[in-house]
Each structure stands twice: as C-alpha cells, then as structure tokens.
Image (cartoon, rainbow, N blue to C red; front, side, top):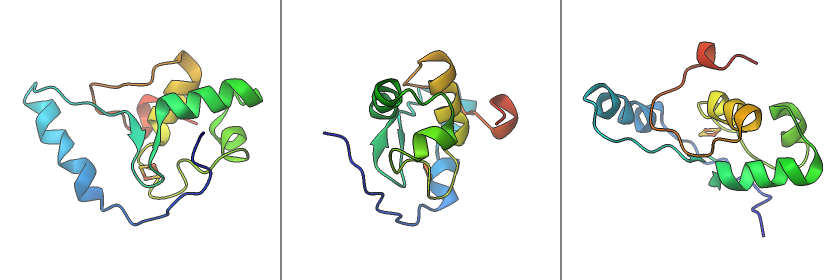
Length: 98
Ligand code: FES
C-alpha cells in the first residue's frame, strides 16, 4: 500500500545540504525518497506506472509526493523519465528541468 497523505512536515534545506558535502567528498550518498512526504521513488514510480502518469504534475494528481519543499522534484522527474529510483549524486533543477 502506498502512502497517500503527505505529512507536509517542514524539511529544512539543511537536511539536503548535509548530503552535498558527502557527494563532493566522493563519499557514497543515497537519495531514494521524497523526505517531506516520506515516499520512496520506487513507490512513486510504481504508482506512476499503475496510473499511467508520465509527468510529476500528473503523478501528483494521484498521490502526495513532492508537495513539500520541492527539492526532490529533479529526482522524481528523472525517475519518471528513466525509471531510476536510487540516486548517488545531487541533482538540481537544471539537471532535470520540468
Ligand atoms: S523532499 Fe521535500 S517535497 Fe520532496
């Protein structure tokens, strides 16, 4: 069962920025979910496949994901485009534009 209600907890950008130094140091970093909504990219991809959503906006009409800080948007867009669900480098908006 997929979570359908986003907790909409505030996730400080500092949580994400903590991962940046790890990536810059070539240390392993694993990004696999929307932290605000506590939804894994794998769950988002599965829902997208089930409902035929090919865009983030379309997916968001079927589940609460990416509705908080928005830092996961480039990851979700890449997930929808390529099927990747685990990322080991930092993506920014320009890396996966809407
Ligand atoms: S991590 Fe904040 S909306 Fe996804």
